[in-house]
Amino acid sequence: MNRKRVITLAAITIISFFAYNITAETLTPSQRSALVVLIIASGLWTTEAVPLAATSLLIPMLQEFLGIQGFKTALAPFFDPTVMLLLGGFLLAVAVEKYDLDEYFAYMILSKVNAGPKGVVLAIMFATGFLSMWISNSASTALLITMALKITENVHDEKGNFSKIMVLAIAYSATAGGLSTLVGTTTCAMAAASLKTMIGYDISFFGWVLFGFPIAIIQILVIWVVLFMSFPTSVKELPPIERVSTQLTRNQRNTLIVFVFAVLAWLTSSLPGPIANLIGWSGHGYSSSMVAGAIVMLLYFTDLLDEQDIKNGKWSTLLLIGGGLSLGKALEVSGLVGVIGNSLLGLTGGGSPFQTIALVVFTGLGFSIIASNTASAGIFLPIAIGLGQQTSVSPVILAVAVGISTSLDFMLPVGTPPNAIAYSTGKVSMGEMIKAGILLDLVGASLTILLAWLVWPLLI
Image 1 (cartoon, helix red, strand yellow):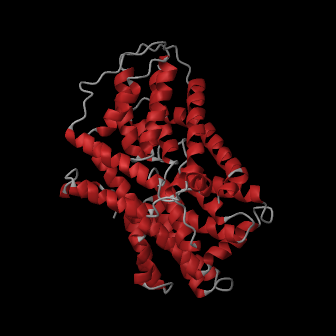
Image 2 (image 1 turned 90 degrees about the vertical axis):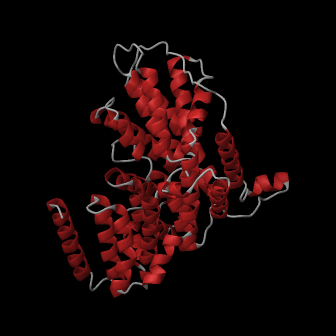
Image 3 (image 1 turned 30 degrees about the horizontal axis):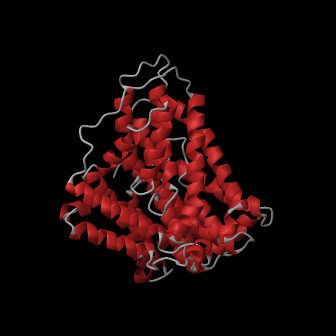
């Protein structure tokens, strides 16, 4: 092992040892054990001293070793229906990328835009946001950034800011667009899964859209304005966007059919009451996870995917989600989540709804700045739900707030994969990313707080 890993593991072990011993008179043995698991998981996820997936697998093993719950029970969250939901989304994205259907979408959208540089940037942002609703943020970012670099390489820009705007606009809108659906960003799916596991509340696919889509749209427009304010440009005209062929191949057509089926089936799983009453149909009734399973079967039975494609299903991310859900269950069954919730009550004005929501949103955002967004959600979701059970704020609202706020960082390359991709192009410096990102972080957090406080109670 390298020196940094040894030092990190030693520090986490020492902190865990002291935490276990100094809480002997205030916590039960089970709660003390859960605290040790929380410290170890948080420390390893935050520092990435070992791969994130390895930490996830360690969590159920520690629960058995420390007597919190049996290994079989602790391992059950790794097979949560949310894992199937995300696997279906990941493999659908694999098919879309495999047959360049994402490139076809992007070119068809952008080739229709003739509204000057600002209009093209906005169209690219909405195209990225749309793709990020259904395929991974990193995939949509990588695709559109490649296109953006082709567009900007022949642009005469005296200040050199237009390429910065394009790169950051794509990365940021991918992050924002992913907030709209349960398959857009893993933190959203984790929030829904944690609610189902801890309090039995089920958020439908369409139900999440009502929470996340308004934030995504508003945030994309804010990003557009902020970037052109932060990086003034003199570019007035862009070269035309061309594509060799606009005809779909057979595999592209079949992938498009599966894609459209997936979108419609996910959205109509369970319709909100007002819509159901209006059209006289409440939805087909099959869960989003069941739909995801059907999507996977369609992709394989139609030969759009083969055995080699399964390895691209982002299994490390699925393990990370299982680990987060298992950690949440450990905190819940031990009662530690209630203890932490009581401690946080003092920071919320005795349970003031606005202060409680603000605390959860800014804490979730803070976690994601220093750690991966998925790991941040895994750490903080059970705590936020436990806090909601002890205050006048619904746990549903707080869980959704965590799912969104942990994917809101626009400031640092480590915040989200799209940020890292944008930074890796060399078109934007760390200082420039922080300059635009810190304002967007504050706007996104404030928007989430206001909607959670004023609008979301009407949706549950």
